[in-house]
Structures are given as C-alpha cells and as structure tokens.
Image: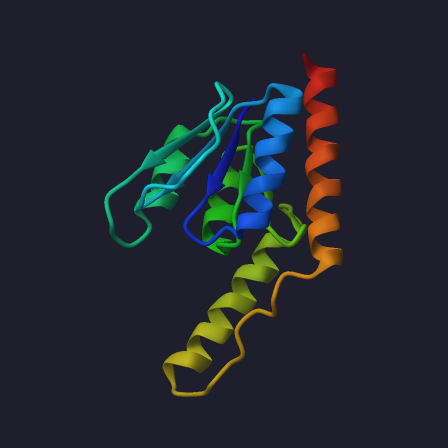
Length: 151
C-alpha cells in the first residue's frame, strides 16, 4: 500500500510529516503535482510531475492508486473518487473522509461554489493549526499501523 499526495496545495509541514513517516516505516510516498517539488533523497519518496491543467494531478492519482492506498488531499471530489476506488482519503487538516461523510462534504462544496459564482464572498480556509497538524499525524499513524498489521 502506498501514500499518494495531492501536492500542489499540500502544506509544507504536512509533507515533512509524510517524509519522516515514509522513511521511518519504509512506506512509499508519491507526491503528484504540476510543478517540480523538492523531496529528500529516499527510496521511499518520489514525485510525479504532471502537465498543467484542470484536475490533471487528481486524475493521475486516481489512475495510479489502488484499493487500500492512502490519498492525502483537501480536494473533495478527489477524495470522493479515491473512496469509490477503495482508498482511504485524508485531508492535510486531519479529517478522515469516509463513505458516510463525503457526500455531505460534496454538497457543501457545491453550495459554496454556487455562492462564489453568484458573487458572494466566502472566506478561505484558516491557517493550519497545531491541533490540525496533530490530528493529521494521528490519522496517518492509525493508517500506518493498520498497514503493518496487514503485511
């Protein structure tokens, strides 16, 4: 099982957590982005650069991921596709997306998109908090422990 990262918008601190976990647990982490991302030298960490374009990185992650893989993304439609494929989807803020909560998140995303397209200003996300970093680390550790049990 692998970890796939929607890396264009993933915070640096989350990537650093993933890099340390990859080396510590010998788990393959692949960052997918439309630009080159600096990664530490490790056989467990690599980066796939895709062409620029709408959802190109997302489509690459969906195409390459397999059931049981972990997908790190704040993109709700990508999380939905990953879950449909049997992957686990986790936001950089530590929110575990599930088949039970993803449809509600998609509906909220679509509602906010409708508001924005009609000219209503909506606030962007807050800065990543220490609590969210810890929540991310905790969810990542749970997935890694479950992965080790399956091997």
